[in-house]
Length: 324
Image (tube, rainbow, N blue to C red; front, side, top):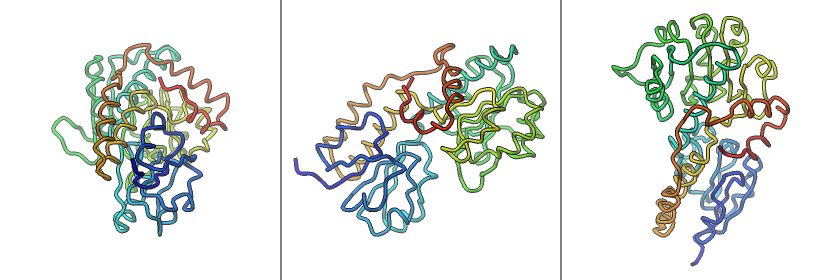
């Protein structure tokens, strides 16, 4: 088959090698090293969060599609892409089960580490999107009292943020990174939290004011951090203070990564009108093993130890992670 053009792909995206070669000239490169020169003659760019897709990278290139193997698109300047006629595709909800597994594994691990009882207490979920809605459902299924809030959704099953912070024994953030919610969890947020409550962030590092959390750490009963404000650099004081810390791997399950790759392939197939690729993506998707949380299914403490031993290897730990 004649190639449809060139496509540039982040080399750390799993399960994708070999899938697009029948249709495109494919170039693989580390996401944080992709530059405009690499995009010469390229029709599409496939990335993760480590590639900043903005005017500086994309202007005067032939790229017509940017596809990201992530839920969020905060690393993509969507306004610029729209103005330049570049389509943007993402993978919403791809790793939602993995993040939910991480959340409840973290709660289980905290119980053992601190000798406290958290199961059955009140779980506050902030953000009711792809991940948050599943966390809400799983929390109820496991016997937790659940309070839910979404800063951008009104719903009869949702409560106001003040009530959630006042009454939750565990507060878990599941909101996207938008400019208006940078430092969403700030000093007022932590001062409002119930004394002795647990705080968990596995959404985006920039939605947390790390210094505010550190200043209020003594009043909290536990801190779990998976995402960091200046990745791959890590706030070492927060790393030391957190009870559980991991290098942005909450959604790193085989299911989540296969889902993301499948969604990317479908987006590329749709954009370029490749029926054969669409069929292959559907077949690929059918072999994805759907996985949900079960007690003891994930040893989060092993990942915590590996990260603490070498926080400077943040990117290496992520990119060589053995997907659970």
